[in-house]
Amino acid sequence: MNFPLIKQTVLIVAMLLLQAVGAWAQSEKDKPSSNSSPDAPPSFAQRFFYGGHIGMVFTDEQTRLSVTPMAGFRITPDWSAGLQLEIEYYAYDYSLNNQTATAKSYGIGGGLFTRYEAPVPFLQQSGSGIYAHAEYDYMRYSRCYNGNQPNSYDNRHALQAGVGIYIPISPRSRMSFTALWELWHSDGTPYSWTPVVRVGIVF
Image (spheres, rainbow, N blue to C red):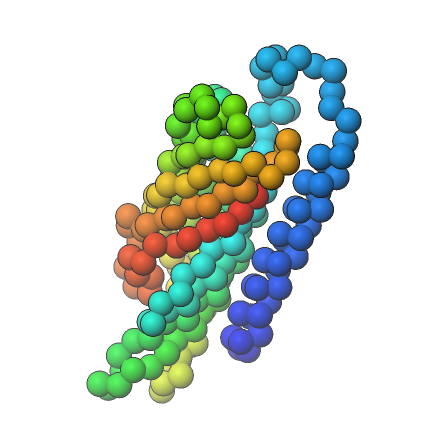
C-alpha cells in the first residue's frame, strides 16, 4: 500500500472540500434573500445543515489527518445532532526490539455526533458562537509496519468530546474550529490522548 500517496490524497480531498464549500457559500451569499420575516422561526427543512471539516495532529511521535463530511439537524436552536463519515491517514512511532519503528494506517468509518451551542445572545446575533461537541466513531483501518511485522486490520471504536467556536463567513455559512479529546477508545488501537484540531464549514 502506497501510504505517502494516501497522505497526499487526504490533503488533496481536504483542499477540494474547502474550495467546493467556499464556492457554494459565495453562490449562496449572492442569492437574493427571501421575503420571510427575520424573526420567524426556521422551518423544518431549514433546521437541517451539512458541511465538513479536516482534522489534524502533528507531534514528534505521530501525524494524523482526516477528512469528515457531516450532516445534521437542529433539534432546538442550541442543540443539534447528526451523522458523519471519515477518511483518515495516521502514522505513529512505536518501540520494536528496543528500536523506534513507524507504522502507518489508513481507515474509513463514521459515527454520530451532537453539539450544544452556548446561548450567548451577542455572539449568536453576530453569527458567531461557542459550543460543546461529543461524538461516537467507528473506523475500519489497515496498518502497515516498517519492521518485520505483517500488516494488520483492526476496528476502532472511540468516544470523543471537546469544545469549539463558530465564525461567520457568509449569511448562510460559518467556519468552525474544534479541539477534541478521546475519552475512551477500544483496546488494540494506536490512538493517543493528543487532542485533534479540526477546521470545518457548516451550512
